[in-house]
Length: 231
Length: 231
DNA sequence: ATCTTGAAAATGTGATCACAAAAATAATTA
DNA sequence: TAATTATTTTTGTGATCACATTTTCAAGAT
Image (cartoon, rainbow over all chains, first blue to last red; front, side):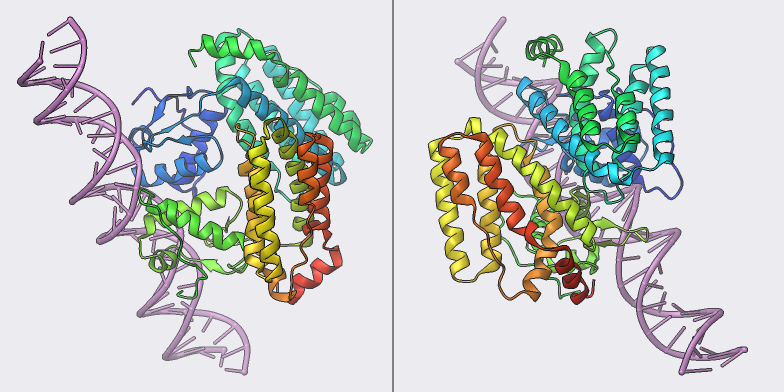
C-alpha cells in the first residue's frame, strides 16, 4: 500500500491529524491522482502518513460525506467510478451552482478582490504556458473560489467544492490520456463583467467557462476515454 | 448532558454504530430539536446513546462536513446560529438547487413514481390536519426527496439534504414561537405538471412551493423571531 | 463587590487493542 | 486441471486509555 499517490503537504501547527489527513487525501482526489476503483485501506493510509487508523477513518468519513469517496457494502472505500451519465449530471449541476454563486457574489465584490482575481488568472496562464496541468487546474479552482468567496455568507462554496471533488478523478484520467488539457479562459470576460457589477454578464461568463471547458467533452469522447482507462 | 433531545431510532441490524449515531443526530437537527448555540460534547452524546467516543466523533465529523454542525476554534461543536443573511442565502440556494433537481428528474418520472408522490402528499395533508408539525415537515421532505430521486444519478440530493439540514434549526425555532406552521402546498400543481412531463411547469411549481413556504418569511419577521429566541 | 489566581473537572484528540467479518492464500478433492 | 474447502492474513469497527488543552469553579487579593 506504499503506492498511494499522496504527496506530503504543508502542515501548519495546531492542525489536527485528522484534518491533515483530510486535506491531503482531498487534494490527491481533487487533482485526480487516486484512480477510481482503487480501494483505499485505512491502515494503509495511516501508515503512509505515519499516523494511526482513528484520524484517518475520520478523514475518510468526511470525504465520503462530501461525495469524494463511496463506501461499498463490503465497507470498503473507494473513489467512485465515473460514468457518462454521472459526468453529465455533475457538469450541469456545476453550471447551475456556480452561476448562482457568481450572482450572489457580485454585490460583495471589491476592487481589491478583482485585483486578486487578475493575479490568479495571470498565474494560471503561466501554468498553462509551461504545460503544468495540475497547477493550472488548482489555479483555475482558485480563481472560481476567490470569486464566490467574496460573498461572506458561505453556504454555496462547500457544494461547489464537492462537485470539483467528484469531477477530479475524471480530470486525472483525462490528463493521462490527453497529452495537454485544453484550458478555456473566460476569466477576463468575467472580470470585465465584475467591474461593471453586471450580474447577468458574470453569470454568462461563468456558464461559458464551464460549458466550453470541462463541459466541452462530447458524450462519445467521454465514453471512449472511460473505456480507454479501463473504467 | 442528559437533556439531549435525541429520540431513539429504529436500528436495522448490520448498521454500524457511527452510522446510527449519524442518523439520530441528523434527524434531531433536521427537525430542529437541537438548539443553535447549544454545545455538543462527544462524551455526552456517546453516553446518551450508550456507545463510546470513537463512533460519535465520526458522526459529528460527517455532520460538520454536511454543513449541519460547525467546529469552533476551541474545537467545540455546535449547531450554527442562524442569521437573516444566512437564511436568505440558504433559501435562494434551495430554490435554485431544487428547481434544477426537479428538471433533471422529469425525464425519469414513471407513473408508479407519481402515485407514490400522491400518497406522500396525502399523508402530509393528514399530518397538517392533525397539527403535527414535525411529521408534516418530514413528509414534505419525503415528497421532495421522492421526486428528485427519480433521477437515478444521485449527485444533487445530498446537497439538497444539506440545505434542509441547515434550515432545520430555524424551523425548530419557528415552531416554538409560531403556534402553527403555515404549510403551502404546491404539490398538486407539481404533480399535474409531472403528468404532462412539463419541465418548466414542474420547476415553477417547486419554485412557488419554496418561495411561498419557507421563503415566505419576511426579513423583519426572521430578525424578530431570532431575537425572540435569544439568538 | 470585582477581579485574579489556582486547582479540579471536563473535553477533544489520537494511539492501541480486541474482535468479527472479509479477502487472499494454501490445501484438498473431484 | 478446475473447483471446493480450510487456513491464514488483512481489514473495518469500536472501546479504552493517556495526554494536552480548555473550561469551570472556588479561594484569595485588591
